[in-house]
Image (cartoon, rainbow, N blue to C red; front, side, top):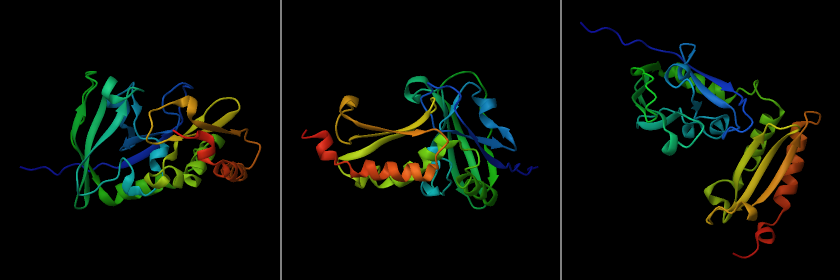
Length: 231
């Protein structure tokens, strides 16, 4: 006798990093399954590999996006690159009116059990992605500033940005908080001493939108050729 496959509900929760030296300073996006944080069960000491930065841009490019083509997705890590310290992977695919999480992998070998295949209602799943992408209620001033800067400077981060591109936008949870923007040569070895780094201080006293707009005007007025010189 075949029993019906249980259908779960997906939730996405934003968690701001509490450790000032964590590799990822954008907020974690942690998957909730039927209201419970999935990573607490399968990787209790791990960090979600999906951050609020990954929810910028079209939903098709997000880590949790589901299509008919199966995709292997890094779900969590050990605050380190997974090729070094391991992590949890899952394959996500859409099957009709369902979204399936399957083929779990634990490259950390931390003896925590992996879940069985998970099935989600596709309509509920898509609605949750839409909701999370529009939810900024959790943001502090530095999170809002980092997001707005990433949106304003998107033309300097993509493949069409040319030889000089924005390589990183990072919220720094210092006192006062700041957002750093690092620009460098895309096709050159990493040489931080040659990168152009600018900081936007975020005290929470000034309107964030105005701060970002003023920063973008100053930043984009900089001629990368003058800054970096000939190779």
